[in-house]
Amino acid sequence: MRILLALLLIGCAPKKEISELGFSAGIHPVRFRPNDFARAANGETLETAASCGKCHTVQHANWLKSRHRVAFTNPLYQESHARENMVWCVNCHAPLMKPEGNPPKVTDRLLVEEGISCNVCHVREGKIITGKMPVPAPDKAPAHTYTIVPDMKNEKMCESCHQFNFPTHESLALSATQPIEYASLPMQDTVEEWRRGGLANLSCQGCHLLGGDQSHLFPGGHDLARVSEAIDLEFQQSGELVKAFVHTRGVAHSFPTGDLFRAVRIRIYDKMDLVHEEILKKDYGNVTPEALVPGGAAKRLVSDTTIAPPGPGEFTSYRTFLFKALPGTALRYEIHMDYLHGMNHVITRLPLQETMPLVRTGTVTIGRRENPN
Ligand code: HEC
Ligand code: HEC
Ligand code: HEC
Ligand code: HEC
Ligand code: HEC
Image (cartoon, rainbow, N blue to C red; front, side):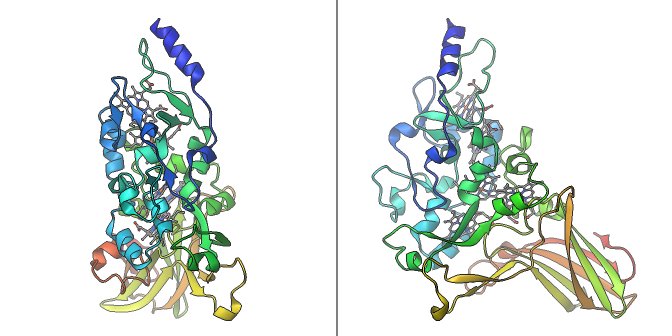
């Protein structure tokens, strides 16, 4: 009887497209009704991530340490949202809203302190969303009723939030009362960068969701050990100049990617003196009022010094920069993540260790190989 019931439930699992989960790349919130919450076999409503964590202890413990968990509450977001107070931001950083809620009212959002939670990615219409029907333990009925969304397994899931454009200048002006419309200039281009690169055979999930006891950590630019593993510096003397190579290893999109203010700073010191600072980032400038076009963005891309993803058949990529130093000079380098480049002076309440942490430092004697420590 149990087995029959299990088979029946398996047979019933509906299939859906990712577009049916209510994601809209930030244009609207995701309206979540009380009966959207999943229920345990004993009828208990599973409202919070902690209620899923009773059984899925690893996923829950890891998600607690992830940036997804703090997408709404982290100070970098809070401070920049306070400066640009738009509903649009909340639609991605705390997307769930009561069915009749008012989008600008944060009190109408659900569980904002959980940011991008289990509910956001896995729960709709009382069912658990997953990529493939799981096989329950022998002699057990399935723990949930499921909706199968095959695109949970690929980049389309991540694209719902990690790929979007600048708003049109017209919709930006009306954003307090009307939903955003997108222009054609990418604001976060992570998924397209990955598609253009040579490692698109490796999935976002494969590198960021990770299996086993690492599952749901979603490591990225805030995981300084991971960043450190992904980059190498090499120096070559050429006359009075030094050519520095910044290599990436296993970064399938640009480095850095993501938020428009994100940068990496490489500082080269001769004793205490700063010899050179190289900034890896996409730089945007304002479009002058005369140059605005209908449906265009109010910003334009001025320069891009990020490291491109590896080419076809490659696992590594690099960029170079030049600075002056004589052969035999002992130099020290520092690599910093810089989460809000150019905004730090605006966001004065945050200490520099938080907005611009040190990834790695090392010494090198020019003309010889790098000696990291
Ligand atoms: C950003 C979206 C996202 C969030 C947030 C998220 N998950 Fe997942 N989860 C996924 C994806 C994608 C998969 C892989 C789906 C597949 O391959 O079918 C997955 C897989 C799983 C699996 C299968 C086993 C495994 O580890 O791969 C479980 C169980 C799970 N999630 C539970 C949870 C729980 C519990 C939470 C909250 C604590 C959570 N997830 C939060 C996206 C998410
Ligand atoms: C009472 C324990 C329990 C609770 C609470 C629970 N789950 Fe599960 N879940 C399971 C078990 C057991 C499985 C294994 C498959 C099965 O038996 O159906 C599972 C399977 C899953 C899967 C599919 C895993 C795969 O391998 O594809 C996902 C996703 C998932 N749960 C998410 C959640 C989320 C999100 C919550 C909270 C809303 C939650 N679960 C709450 C026990 C639980
Ligand atoms: C509902 C929207 C949403 C979805 C879906 C989503 N993310 Fe995210 N993700 C975010 C937001 C918002 C942040 C930024 C949190 C913060 O403020 O630091 C983030 C942060 C991250 C980070 C950490 C970045 C860092 O700087 O350390 C990684 C890695 C990541 N996401 C990967 C993924 C992957 C892989 C997927 C697909 C399986 C995915 N995300 C799906 C919204 C989403
Ligand atoms: C081959 C492994 C690999 C794949 C595939 C991959 N990433 Fe990453 N990703 C990394 C590494 C390593 C980092 C850390 C270095 C860094 O900060 O860029 C990273 C960083 C990030 C960050 C943080 C932003 C930053 O630069 O600090 C986000 C967001 C992200 N990835 C999202 C994605 C999404 C979405 C996909 C799928 C389209 C994806 N990644 C595919 C390896 C990968
Ligand atoms: C379409 C979805 C979307 C919208 C809209 C959006 N964000 Fe984000 N935001 C993300 C994702 C995805 C990330 C993760 C990429 C990364 O870590 O670089 C992110 C990262 C950030 C970060 C970096 C946080 C960190 O941990 O380093 C800040 C700050 C931020 N967003 C602020 C905002 C503000 C302010 C707005 C509104 C003006 C906004 N976002 C609108 C999706 C969105």
